[in-house]
Image (cartoon, rainbow, N blue to C red):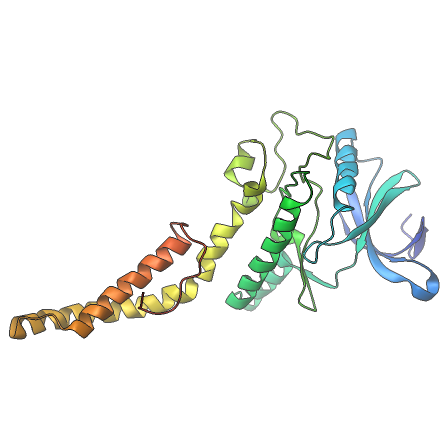
Length: 281
């Protein structure tokens, strides 16, 4: 049935939001008419989904209804209506990260560094909660821009645990089958190894750290030129005075020290402490 609005169990479907090869998302109303609230219904198309996909969907419901965290999209109901199994989740008024990123690219605007820092912090909080929730060893396995929702009020929420792995899930990955998006897949996941928390964090956090260090690259580019000029001046000072001026020495060493801090954070990945701006220790 393609007529809207229409009843779907205890929900009133208002309009379709998205449709894939196996299922669909609908904007819906839940609750009594005088106090109904917006929500999203995620369904599986019964005539298209195979047994394995249906089991993954049921397994997702087992996991997500137990989770409650400010950086995860709340799922508050699951069930089956007229042969269609569904999940009911909160409606997040906003855009996903992929749409936001593409909009910036279309407008020729660099993605703001302070926004990237905020997204990283909020996603890390949500993932930490999921990874340490109870003893179910939950791993998302599909952390990617389409699954990161940004609300107009500034909230950052991770959604779609359909490919997640945990001890609650009956479905196991068959030999030779790898779940997830190739562009955001960790090496361990691509090799088909047993997933853990590092699988979610491996691929995207180092890349984000590199981007977060961009302001340092810009400043250090100019300081490196200045340091080179200081070395040339110091050579002449040594020729005429026999001494390397202390102030020039301290500046050149400070610039190299700054470069080492940035390299340790963004390239060598030996520290998670964001490097301070300055040539001091």
